[in-house]
Length: 219
Image (cartoon, one colour):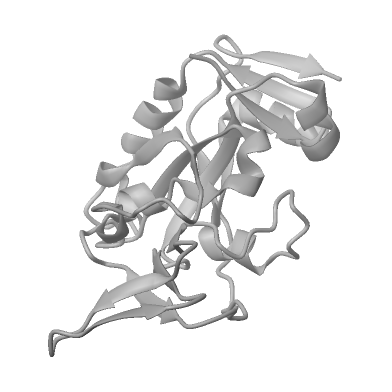
């Protein structure tokens, strides 16, 4: 299955092709951008459960209450996970949004294996726990199941409004970032403004030249 990386600058596309250069941004980068419906998403990596009939809560004293307009949120540690965003589609419509230079990568496992080869006990990132796959665009009414506790699932979750991107994502975290239940849990009783934190700098990786394996498309 091919994946596609769009660039607004040809030089950046050629850096991927000739050097295997990847710029991986922390999730907080996307949460902190203006919510423009393209790259900015304050709920990136957040599972939101907001039933239409209200959030039902079972209290420790046995009471069952319903919070009208209430919602449950589970979030990865946004400064500890870095992602590389691509798409499953070769599309002129996506090129108009993300850039007219598009690198087609026939096999995403090539990137995953080369990133994983950087594993070292002294590395800041835990390359032994790479997460990759298609993004899951979820309706807020969908029950969370066990996904709320799994950072490797949360990092691949976005609101359904972004489904047009058809995103494929590679993610790697700092030590323990992908551990089970290493998440932030919040219950809101109504609308809540997003909380923005200082954003770490991106991480640049070089995984070796790809020019014999990929194709450059121009739109």
